[in-house]
Length: 106
Length: 475
Image (cartoon, each protein chain N blue to C red):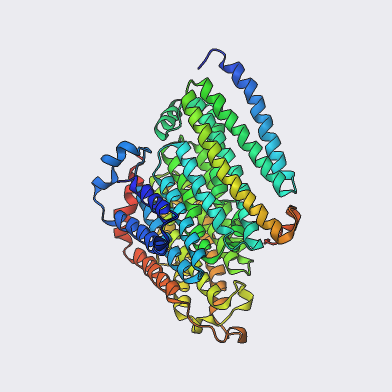
């Protein structure tokens, strides 16, 4: 642990928590499929930041870097599939509103 | 040797998609089927030496893989379900191009699942979970119909939330342990498992796994995804994907990485019991066959988690045994639903009836699977449920044992209701011309039914050879 670890952690910790809250809020309340995906991205960015800060604090910067880069690459794959799904939905319903997407119930 | 389980499908995937190999594209199905069968054969006959990671390949591809007894049970289930999915897919997807895409996605899925069961590092676990999930998203939306797209989108969003929770857990554990490998984390948990940060980390990670495994109260996506996916994909999802990505990871981490604590076991048991009750009661009210089977899956997952939460070696043995049995008989039930969908074009149980005389093999195998799910002796499901109930009783959790036994009766109720609505009674004029399903569906039905009966009858041998070592490794 570094000597300035507590300050660093609390400083970045607040940022991470705020980013995660914004992401969760957006995922939960948005009725626009694209905005939901943006919220999902914001969530992931918050976690990436957390991993980098933790890696710096415990002195494992190389490990944290590897994890962050892998995370970004995987995120790209997921978001490509997600946007593909939204595009197909748009072709069917001509809208990207979640309220047009409620056929499965029970 | 172990890295071959990941590298062979990967190499095949790359070769099949090279632009100058149109002839090889026709061999895609045969290749994937061989991979699945080779995996089954490897688990059954490979000598102990094959299960260590050494030699030429290990020098260049050291993912830190490891195969314990638990892993082997899962590898066997993955091989069996994958072979079944391929056979049903070949029979139900007629377009050549579509079938090629389907086989490719299954290869990605097999890489992901083999990775999940073999890795020994929390972050690698996340990577392979994501590989499995991404192929599942595409497979659910495979037909690009609106229902499939909706199911896939719901799964995707909840899976993303699960991912964020798990990664937060990984980051916090890294803060405590200074690394992400199972060994480092387990060692750090022994000394500082009680502090708030590690408890938060474990809580976040386990919540993520609950979402991935579709356990109550995080089960919202599961019935939608299962029922809207194409028939062969439902088999894969229900048979193995949610088990590997949610339940297996939970069993592995709860038993050998996270600290064993009373609070954790309590949470597991409450979530398990809630899943059993909610899943079984919701299944009673469904009229769509696949949706009913999906709720039944939630309920059976509850049994696995309940056994795990018991915390004793016997409970864990029961959980893993039920995991394997459930992979077999739920796959069989979904193959039956695929056979019915193939011939009648619907999964609505209100529009069926009297199919038993038209589709004798499907009817009989469906009865076997249903009785096994409900835990009727001497079929496979009876023994694993019995072990779980005995373990709960021994641990003095009488209330949970009572729930497990009572809900077995409800399970029998909704499955017999399903049998009556689909196979008994008079055939409706709409389905007068229905024949038995194609050979590609009937053969897996027979094999899986034979497996269910065989595991039930040869129960002592199966228990001693495969299951009891699973209980042993945790001590």
